Image (cartoon, rainbow over the protein chains, first blue to last red):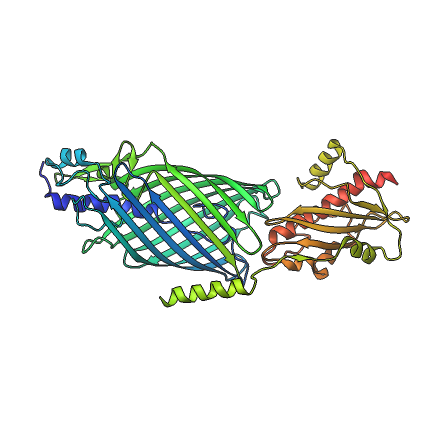
Length: 324
Length: 176
């Protein structure tokens, strides 16, 4: 078995792990967000505009520090009663230090330890590889466009069905994401059950001079109940799959991760807000394979059955909207 | 930078303009005078039994229970009720008048506090219920027209009227 030089190996590992991470941050929001991460079929009425801001914090990896703040500022407009279009402005701030402990995996696969262990790595940590120095960066990530077509309305049909598409362009990545949205309402529409089947493919560009292709397949599911006027709360589950290819090649799947957590939502006539939390479950699987004698894949991004890169054990989301 | 400034300006404009606003429409007294002018209404509080509420729920499909604490009767056998249904964010409160023959006489929205869909309070939409009785279907999109941006409110009001008519048919009518 031949081995890659450390710098090349770290570069690949960073890319694969980052690919998974990047897709973990691929989320969409439209209309009043009763859920945190699940997209519902609550769209803007025809001719109506809404401003939405969302802030997500991913924090806590195996050791050290890793904090990723992501901001998305969105304007949504009801093109018709069943078609909503949106535009986003995306930005982020990442801070990390000594957060990767996969040194043993590294040594096992490459035959020599990383220069520094633990070392500083993860999504948007563009430090070139094995350094354990602190890293911090704030940046403009890009813009996203979004369209949702509500084929059937869950208020008037047993199952609401919608199609979602979101292209993203910017210095961090170019991406196209599509969702199939299913939603059913019960108990006078107080109980909402929804699921999203999410597929995304992207070109990651944030590692200097090393763009790479990735794809993601996610299933999001959630339930919320309006337990009092203006207030609802519920639970959301995410199954996340990353691939080190642009076309969901199962032979190049890098990880499968699970997330679960609660949400709470408040809505007034003039504004609404949602606070959600989800924790990565201790059930992650990461995969590697041999390519031309070298081990490749996602195991460098995992330890103790957790996936790192952009993933953390804790994810917090705050979003609020103002209908115009 | 220009995009951020635009968004900030839009946000400030929205906040300064008050964005959406709540509306309280007619008072109970105004609605009574409108529906039954020059008529003495007698308050007849009704305590619905669990069995009656179950029948009403089964026949109307509405889980929000019929309220019995604000019901009035006219000497001619008409009825005036204050009822509520679930709105998008808060309860929608309305008054409904029922003719002595059990058909809908009139409806007035008393309180509607939502971001969109205030057209549900307009008579041009509400009048489609007038003359309907318990034998009529009141399904949104088939028997009742919807309003853009207020699908949920329209559906619940239509279902609520059906619930009120069922309550009249099963509980109030036998009180005569």
